[in-house]
Image (cartoon, rainbow, N blue to C red; front, side):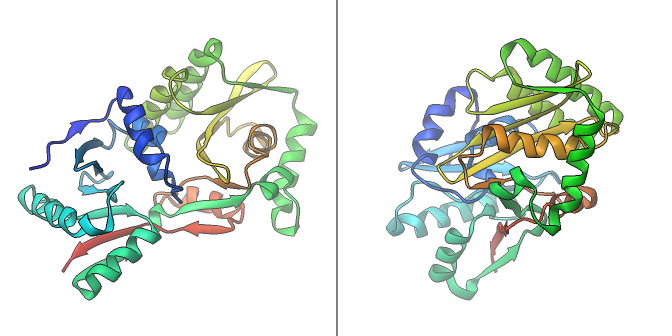
Length: 296
């Protein structure tokens, strides 16, 4: 039987060994992402025959497996049979979630119509061209360019990288933002994830930027380069009362820190209407799908 253990920071080298060889398409398979959400989503893992198996809880409290990592085609059937047994014993609602297109296709070819596959639209990742984000060129982004220019015209600002000296200020700003927005449920989980990320800034692979408006820390954002073609923006927080600040930090972060990466993943919208509207307003080049899979 599989024996799962809680994910810790000390597991980074182990996870890098399994994750780094693959060019995953979504944010789910970033160690940074897994680590900062490990408590909120009760992320656990096991190693079986040199295959990494991750068990995770969704925001509704239901457990599932992510796609196994490091398997060989000849042993995939056995691994899935073992996971099916575990699912039944522990009464999990879903066998797999967070799975990407290539693994979904492999399951289809292996099991055909004996499995049920469902698109998980609320968790599709939003993928953008970095060139568009840093220039805001074209008619579609004209409104965003106007917001950006409004900020430049009306505010005195400076930008700076996130360093150890300003970690506490970033955490304070995150707490204030959460309190202003009824800090419970997902937002409370997110606040804890931000704190985990910032407090371990010297051990995790991320890039951060802050914006000071009139000498007050008013926005910050955190991302990482996961490979030569893709960067992920994990966190973006700004004072909504400052006109154009969100447009400014979005553009400036890519422009100053991610300009060498062609595609930017700004993660999912979780089915939150306002968040979906905001992400669509930047006209993603693609919504990267994720799937849920169960056996019939």
